[in-house]
Length: 191
Image 1 (cartoon, one colour):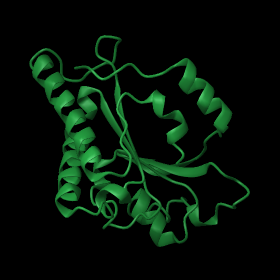
Image 2 (image 1 turned 30 degrees about the vertical axis):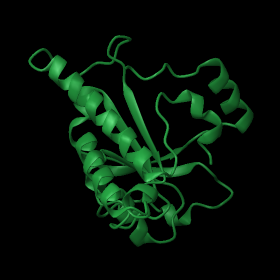
Image 3 (image 1 turned 180 degrees about the vertical axis):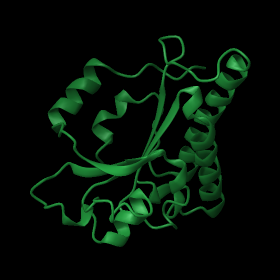
Image 4 (image 1 turned 90 degrees about the horizontal axis):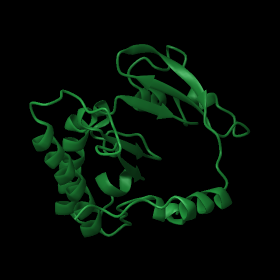
């Protein structure tokens, strides 16, 4: 629901249809593979440019893809494709963001493949550690104590950095999302 009004900002867009989701993930993995073939032996990592842009995959509600897709075969294929993107994409300029309401292992089976993990307000210290990694709560990430009156406050962990950071994200109103989507629509997908 949140992404719909800005859907013109995205080159590819899929809703809840299992086939559409798998097709989108397949297209992204294929584009990444094409880039890998084109750049193999030329560079080790991609510095995004206009010719080789950063590609961002946003999965708004990971549970809809990894747990509740409704088609077991499509769900397994979606998880496989996400795993490929998360293990190979970063060096090639393919970044994945995924959001989940429930941070359990069944919902986020590939949690260790995300180099950055963000926890907004959660229910318990165990959910903090599930989301941010072992010992995050003990190191000060008290996401279960974030008051409702402080939306956007979160804790972030980064691979290789022991201590979590407390951050606050800004809020973008719906009218601004619609304006930006109208003024800056995404280019069409390459044929």
